[in-house]
Length: 290
Image (cartoon, rainbow, N blue to C red; front, side, top):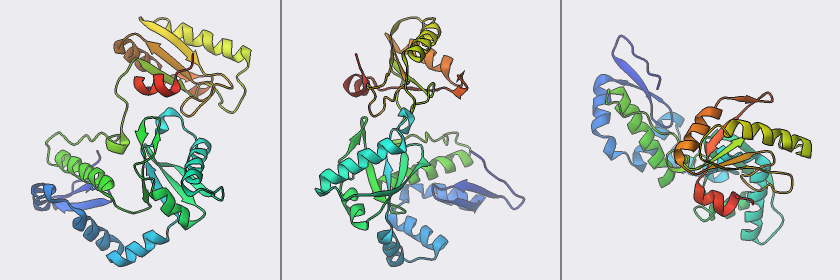
């Protein structure tokens, strides 16, 4: 994590919301009081930065048509179009109407979070009521208004602040796993997904399929305990399993780890290969195709 030091013994660290400048004495005091982080402290800090009182902020948040959805498995290659369809389907089921519209989706909000702008504020409340009730590819989705703090977000912010302070005072414990909580990462498993090896909007012809299959077998065949290579063809696609992606099954995790290391950063047909572990329970329940 980047830090800056100056002659007056000030230090900077990221508290989860902004860069904070502290003297050494302030850093020590902050470390002593880190266990006391609470909602009132968050509100006070936000008020100091924005000049808003709690009531003004609440009105601004209530007027927003944008929600943040956390827990989205973006590493599995979910697109804005797929996410839009999923959200619209859930809103229609919850609201009992087809009159639902999404104005925009920002897929670059975070490692596993997206910003969704709805066309109607009433739909924001409908979607918020689904907080914690929706599951996508094995992950529970957390939904909140833009800039609205929740227990979930405050836990993350506190963890980020704690990690930053620990690193700054030299405890060596500040390398925060940014996929913690809703930023969850997948533990090593026996299944690896290889994607971005094919233009997903195109048709995977028989010729292209055979070429891709031959290349994948050549690469992964060198790794012991290979169980199966499955390439998703047109008509087999589903959420998390797009056309042209490759699922590679091994008989043990060590072999899968070798595969992941072997393929990470490689270029295929001019594209940088994306490779990730797939939770085995999720794979065999929702993604596996015979």
